[in-house]
Each structure stands twice: as structure tokens, then as C-alpha cells.
Amino acid sequence: MRGPRFIAACLATSVAQAQSDLPISSTLQNVLTNAQNSGLYHYPTDLTRGIVPKAFHSHNDYWREIPFYSALSVGAVSVEADVWLFNGTLHVGHEESALTNIRTFDSLYVQPILDTLRRQNPSSSFVMGPTKNGVYDSDSTQTLYLFVDVKTDGATTFPEVIKALEPLRSAGYLTNVSSSGEVTSGPVTVIGTGNTPLDQIQGVGPRDYFFDGPLPELGTTASNITADVSPIASTDFGAVFGEVRNETLNDTQLSLLRSQIATAHQKGIAVRYWDQPGWPIGTRNAIWRLLWNESVDLLNVDDLEGAANFWQSAG
Image (cartoon, rainbow, N blue to C red; front, side):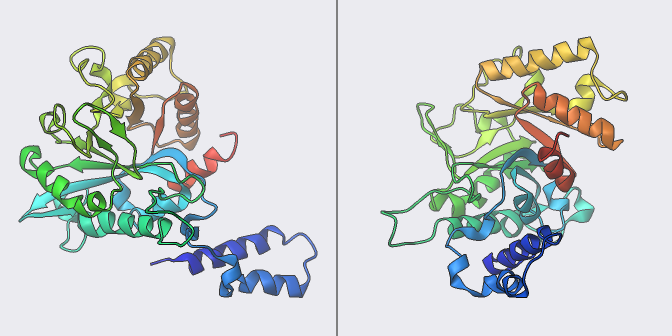
């Protein structure tokens, strides 16, 4: 696992490289290179030091080189795991052919997230009682959205998802809602999607899991869905707007986009579109910028580095 010393080494290297055009003495260069060996340059919660949280969703996160950690390293505030229930175990993968016995919901997500939160909430003589810091050191109040895309039968699979969350639950890290509908934010907010049954969430309380709302229906057939049930609502961009080839939406499409966003926001529900154009890159970036400018709350992202760099520039 890549711990604080590894990250510190990378930071020291990046500082040195950033100054490569300036005259740096060999002594200072040596200090920068070897800083990771000194306790002076570390502190208990520095695992994610310097990472700026960014409002994008790591789509199909389990395809990353290192699921969860790759998204964490660039500041994604949301990740997604597709889960399949076989013989009482939740396996993670895009399809059955991609499943293995060791790539499970617990091994790829629950335990790594728990480990990260333990690092960000260490026992210390400087704090009075337990803390509930999130995964990002630069913004400890930022929740991590954990989308659980149920692929097998929802009625039988989602109860197993709830059970699998117990390590995070017992540590007090999950956003929860009371029987009266009062939401208490926590370091992790779990959102069921895919085959997740609405009737296992709506009307249930207290609970520490939520439902990915159907964005196009929030003003019609799903008008009874509230923010304490669905803090985020999503839909398929391509299915709603069709193919986009000229880096923008026409007036009709733009009107529909604004209507869907307004309906969700009036309910206090955040908005996410998935299946946006991924290529050409210019079209992808233009749609990212358009969605962000129109107040979409969470950008759906396949290219993590592309999104992170896009965030740090004019787009």
C-alpha cells in the first residue's frame, strides 16, 4: 500500500522538478530529496496531503489500475463499484467474465476506504474524543460518495450490500438518516444504483444508505422522491440528448437540461449525467464545461487525469 512516506517522496520530487529552471544548491536539493526520512515533514493525517477534492465521479472505478486509490490520488469525490452476488460474496467487475474470487466489494472498497479513514482519524492526545474526518486532508468535511451498482437480483443482493458495509457502519463513518428524515453527513455516503430496489430504501429508517434517483422522472412519476432518499439523481446523457458532435447542445436540448437540473435542485437533490461523449477530446471537454456551467453537481468521468487537469485549467 502506498503510505505517507511514498507520497512525501513524490511531493519532494515534484517540488524539485518544479524548480528545475532555477539555480538550486546541491545542499537544498539534498534536503528536498531526503525530506521523507525526517519526522519533521510528516503529520498523522498527511496521506492525502495536497490533494484537492474535485466534483467528479470515477465511473467504472474498478477498471482503474488501483480501484479507489487511483480516484483518491486525483481528488475524485465519488467512486463506483459494480457488485455481483455469488455464493454469499459480493464480487466486483463489469461483467461475469471479469469476476475473480479475490476482487470483492470488501477487498477493493470497504477495507481500503476504512484504512484511509483510520489514517485520517488517528488517536491523538490533541483531540478530545473520536473524529469523523473524510478521506481528503485538504477538506475533512467532504464526503466520499460510494455508488454501489447492483448487477444481480436487487431484492437479494442489496441486503448483502448493507451487511458488507458493517465495518464502516460500526466505525461511525456512514452518512445516515433518522426515522424522521434528518440526515447526518458522514465521511462516506453510500448510494445504491443499478438494480437497487427503491422499496428497500424509501420509507426505511433509520438507515445509512441511499438511492440513485431517476433524474428525468423527478417531476413526474418519481416526484415523491426526496433528498433524504436520493441525495443525487442520475440519468444517461446519450439517452436524453442523443449524439452530440458539435461540442454544444441546441436550444431544445439546453432547455431540457436546465429543466431537469432545476427540478432536482428544487428538491435539494444533486445532479449527475453518465454516458457523456468520451471522444473527440474537444467534444468531451466542451460538454464537461457546459454541464459544469449549467450547475451539474457531479461530472461523470472515465479519464481521471484528463478531468483533474481540466479542473485545474480553463478547460
